[in-house]
Image (tube, rainbow, N blue to C red; front, top):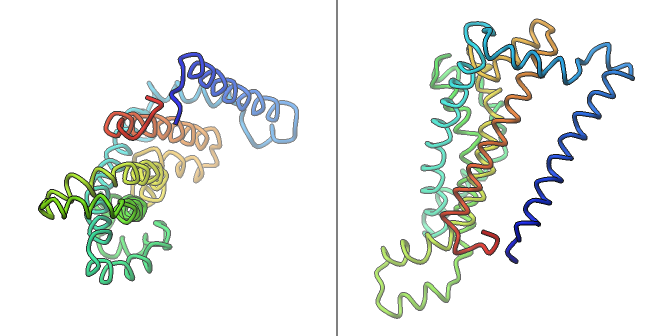
Length: 262
């Protein structure tokens, strides 16, 4: 992959800013000059309410408090999913016995969406914080596991064979060949899983929550407060973008040997 010049990076950023500006202009036009103005607030009204929420509470907390609870839930569920998903995925990818035992069950569970687990999660864990972590875990686990498994499967067998021929132990083959070769694929799965986890926060906060960004949307929906619904959506979108950017930067630094555009 060719390394991007500074001018190309600046041009890419300008296009991104123009795209966002065009979106907001289209939003303002639609909510000013079409029938949508009867049901949908414009961007100025939503942004005004968003800034107000930094100082005036929505429910029990300002937007800072809601962000804290949502981020805590996402990061706890996501971290547990990342650790367990990498272990399970690499186990399936490196051991035919683990693959034979785990993969059929994994393929059975993988298509089930996180929201479908809500009744069972409530039955098992009640309505405290644990079911929220569980739903976010379920939303993240499958992507990380699948990518870790795929990464381990795609390791060049010639490298593994050469390492064995040179007398390298199985432990060192895993740490020095299989794991580094799998990292790009693992990071791709972790990035998708982080976005999924942040989206799953809405489903998680349907389980008896009284705070969080997802709760803001539910509160606005229950009270027919569409500006509040859009505030929750904007916050989730912006924070999701920030989290994805952080993950891409972590991948850029940890897998710099695999990229040419750094």
